[in-house]
Image 1 (cartoon, rainbow, N blue to C red):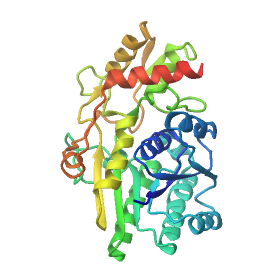
Image 2: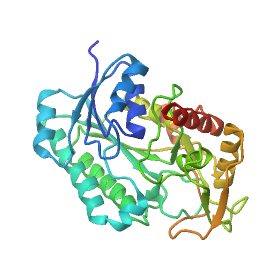
Image 3: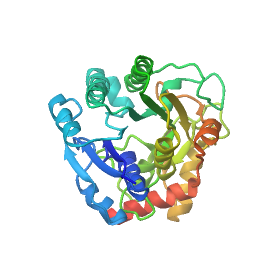
Length: 334
């Protein structure tokens, strides 16, 4: 049987690289398209070390229509997994025009190339940010949608565009995966979350404090309506998240719009994650309580029963796996 060929935009990034590993492991032929604005080309070599296969890599930007068309002309893709996009909530507030231009216009360009070259299947990396501040928990896919920042707004706009493309084309398939909070690294320790500058996400920040790179962790608020007063989120291992993309490609064989939450269904507070990292590294990790940040909510965790029922997907890895793999990845790079 002919190998399925998949274009992975943003495939050298954190979630993209882990998904490429899983795709190769399942026998897919992968072409990565990435502008390296938030990642490192060295990841390609690490993917090859893990899988024994070096994926085709094309350095390019989804804003470059000419280059996108060239890639689609050369490669006959069966599907697209779309990660490429700017992703820092705080930065999106400061630079909204960049986020709308890159994320929304870039996706429109990508869809244009797909339509032009008759590629009818896309898996899109969306986010739980599209649920805004949920009225109740856990969150199901049919909850009302709202956003509190430009980053979330770009995800919601793209979801709407994909829905409209599916309505307009009877043979187009769009699978929207709403991620909760990815954490962890590949078991090999060769790929993981490697932020440049100050980390935007909690886990890599805790790791840097544990390693002595930063003096202490800032915990923003301890007066939320949660078990210990700190914010509760649904942390999901990046490998479990990556497997969700492969199962989406394999299980969904018909046209239409399909939306799934990918999380664990369990809430973990900031201090609980901090304590789990302390247990992993075997020492105290200093922290201080600070004022709440604007826009932060008390708690957010998923109902993932739809993904289990329709895709057969569920998480296999827990908080201890997330901490241990994050720490291993960091030590490998040190």
